[in-house]
Length: 174
Image 1 (cartoon, rainbow, N blue to C red):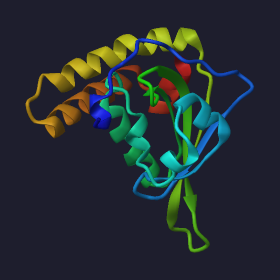
Image 2: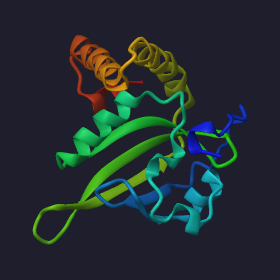
Image 3: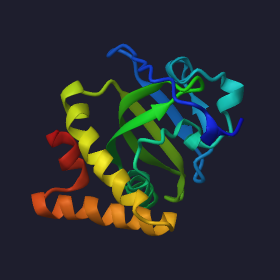
């Protein structure tokens, strides 16, 4: 079964606030490290995750424009915080507050990325869900997926400009 065909179970998974989901990827997004908490909540074994694209966790209710913003930010050498809904191996979902940072080699070039995910504030999730639904609706209005993602990103950037905040400030204001 293709990853995108995996049915959603409607079951939300949780992890303890004392736990941190950790992963590392190469510059293309392939997983090079995952901790036990990651494997437990994602439902995959280490061998299934290593060298798999991090997008193996992509949930269809997660706007693509948020990932574009994330990748644009970290590939420019900056960190980012984002609320993310993921899908595990069994179709269950789980929310995280992700902190993604670039990793630099001795010469200062980006050699990969490090992500630490914590239990998110439930009030923030309640606030981000309608925004994500609006972004997804904008993406769906376009036949061309790239055009939809760009239009959705434009909506998000407009929201940030309207509120005079950066994306990280927006995330922490929820």
